[in-house]
Length: 177
Length: 188
Image (tube, rainbow over all chains, first blue to last red; front, side):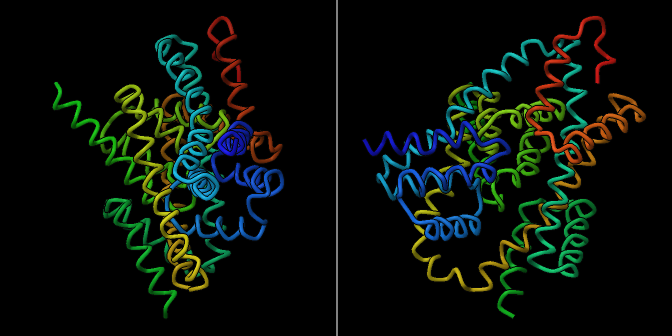
C-alpha cells in the first residue's frame, strides 16, 4: 500500500506542475507534508535546501530521496517513475507526431513562431538567475562573476563544465575567507 | 553496427551524466547544458528541433530536465536511448542525495557549502543570456528582423506583462498554426 501512496504523491505533482521541477516543489510538499504526513514542513525545507546545494534536477532528487526514506530502494524507484514517466511519454508521443509532419508548412510555421516565445522565456530566466545572484552574492560579486564567466565561455571558448567547476572552487574559497 | 550502437549509448550516458552533475539550480538551469551536448557537441539535433523540443517541453507538465533527456535519448536511440539518458541524468544525483544527506545535514550551516552553489548562479545566467540571444537571432533569420522584434514584443507582453502561462501561449501558437488555412503566415 505504501508504494501506491508513494506513486500518487509524486504522480500528481508531475501531472499538475507546469514550469519544470522547481515549479512542482510546492505541490510535492503539499502531498508529502499535508496529505501523507511523511515529514514536517521544517524537515521538508531542510531536505529541499540540501537538494539545492547538490547538482541535478531537483524534482527527481526530492522524489528519489523521499521515496527511499518511505519505501527503501523500491520506494525510490516508484517515486522516480511516477514523477518522470507520465509527462515524458506524452512528450515523446507529441514530438514524434510533430516530426512526422516536419516538412509541412504548418509545422514549419510552429517552429518559427515559437522561437520568439522561447527567447522571451529564456530571457526571463536569465534575469531571474541574475537577480537571485544579486540577492545571495551581492551586486559587485555578481557583476564580476558575470564578466569573467562571459569572457571564459564566449571569448576564450572554455567548456562550460570547466567554468562551472571554477565557479564552485571560487565559491568554496570565498566562503572560507 | 553493433559497435557504433554501443558508442552511441556511451555518448548518451556521458552527455547526460555531465548535464546532471553540472546543473546546479534544478532542471531549468541545465537547459544551456542540454543545448551544448545535444546541438553543439554531438549534433544529435538541429537548433530548430532543440527549440521545438524545449517549447513542447514547456507546454507539458512535469520536470523539464527529464523530459528533455528522455526525448533526446529517444530520438538518438529509441527506447533504450531514452532509458539510458534518463538513468544518466537522474540516478547519480539521487544516489548522491541519499548518501550525502546525513553528512550534508551536519555541514549545511557552513558558509563555503552555500557559497559554492551561489557562485554558479551567475555563470548559469550568462549561459542563459547567450542562448536567449541565439534564439532571438535565429528568429530574425527566419522571420525577418522586423517581424522577429514584433513577435518578441508580443511574447513579452503576453508572458511578462499579462502573465499568461507559457503553456497557454505555446498551445495557442500550435493550434493557430495547425488550423489556419491559406498560408497561415499572418496569424500571430
